[in-house]
Length: 172
Image (cartoon, rainbow, N blue to C red):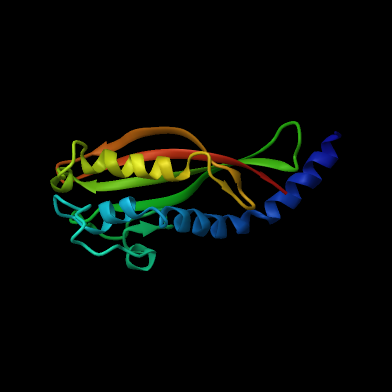
């Protein structure tokens, strides 16, 4: 493929970047289908999976505990929060009709909320639910979601944050 054709394809793809916002909404909805994850986020006590508690809806956590904004606007060390954001878009070197999209889900968990009535801790339970909900999932228009990595992003006396990186190849 000639250079001018590559540039033309990349311009077409650049015009489609605005669709990534709706892709983040789709990912948030997929996460909202996992009741265990919703309970870990919504119920901040030691027994978030108690059968005595009502199920949590996506509407109850969307924009509070599940956010598609890159920043947490205020200091909130009393609840767990997921922040979903696009991290990188990279056109395919061999076929500019494809682009690899990397997105990051950052799990903010108050240190005081780590202990739950489970063999696990809330921070890793949330990460496990996020990964198991998304990995290998085929979402129309996004392709198959691939888990790239998870790492501890930061840890303070009040808050911890784990960053889980995912990718998919999008066709344009």
